[in-house]
Image (cartoon, rainbow, N blue to C red; front, side, top):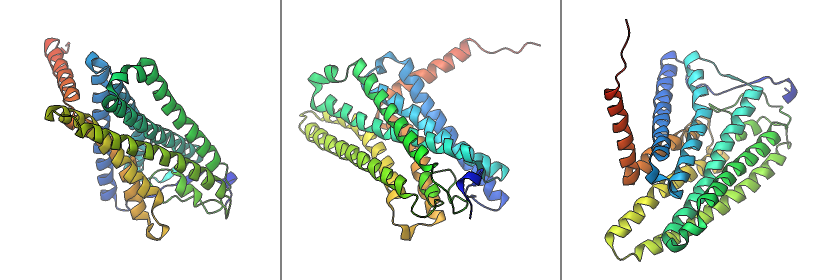
Length: 319
């Protein structure tokens, strides 16, 4: 039996024992990570560069891309390092830091997705009040509230979890530190305090989920009443990407945390955690850029401008 005061490091789940498979996992994670970095960086740069995209919808999308970069950068680089150097250990405070930042980014992202649903509701159902309800100051305030709520949630959960006495060793059945796996190491009954906090957070998330569902019911009712087909297409093109991102985020997260213990196993937990922690940040840029013509045009112009500038001012190597 071990005590949390004597634990200096945790052992993460190894992807594979064979060196070839470890390198394969490293290459897979590297490709996904680079795709996520490129996609989200392009969205952030295009929105900041193109003044036509300085609207509430794209302001929230910029914040979403920043959060996606943060969440995937919290988990994937450590997984890449573990596969490349065949290591499993992570320090106690490194694990606490990873838990905090991962919770911070994903909870702030969920709150932001709720705000984005409200933005689409006001834009489609109350367009005459859009400038009043979502002016520049209001957008900054609600975005800051999303970030602040994520920070507070992460701080409470991290402080509460790592104050628990740990008596079940230091092996985590996951490729990154997450609260459910740490609670499995807690002494008998001592984890109930954190479970209560998890239930409260789940209730808040459920309220946000209900708000998103109600918002989209009203949005679809309003869109179907639009007489012109072009107007309906434009409305759907701004709503469907957000709805797809919300569905992916919520479905993978709910399955990860609400699946019955009877079907829980290390390989399944690994796959599910990969789906909700790695896949959404990587595919969100693709989802948003597929149907959004304004964003695609802005990204295309930005890349074309970069290519033209590089041809106009070529880098010359001096002898």
